[in-house]
Image 1 (spheres, rainbow, N blue to C red):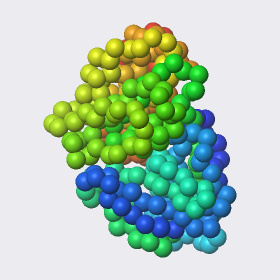
Image 2: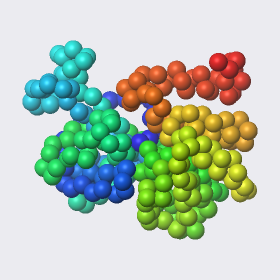
Image 3: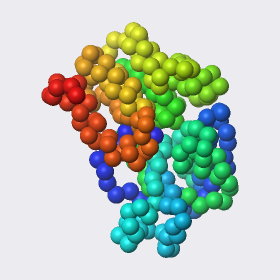
Image 4: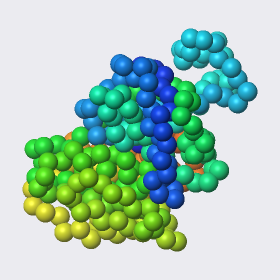
Length: 281
């Protein structure tokens, strides 16, 4: 998943499943391809994301598929459901788009779909969006996140030139969830075990001996720990807002629809609390 800039209209693409791969017990990879990706590009941001469109149960949409037309002619409960996923890789030569899905058994919508996806299946999505890429002028880089941010962190590390100073922390359920990343940066894998999501990340980043110079930071994942790390970086460390890409991709107890609806108010409240412009709730 990725930091979302101001909302704007995004192009719709139609692709087909090319292949799937189980990366770890809780991570499924789906590779999309086909002629429908001829106009797709994802090469400017390392947190590019797409919004997959899942048909509402029992609803058949007219062809050609047109999101705007559907939203004008169908009741809201029959609109396609969207789920947001980070572009793990984009191969323009072969027109292959790689997406990684966190799996929680039968829970959710996109995860179970990814497990059952078969070559040739049609997939529609909007995008890409994106806002972050490692700043080459920074003295060092900090990247921290949970499983939901792993694709963006991995892609960012792979984009860094060799020898660049970077500290990367990724929290996963256990050692079986670690992945190989093609980078000379040594990732600190934090195993959650029975601890709350993000607790290990907050402890690790707080314990980091920050190098000298300007840092460019990328911190994403569950909204609760993101809030804590934002306080550390923005308030305690007084890092400039422009040097931070920090956002909650998801929130415990909320599906994506509920979280996206509540996220603007949440972000505004957190910023007001931490910037001292309003009393804490």
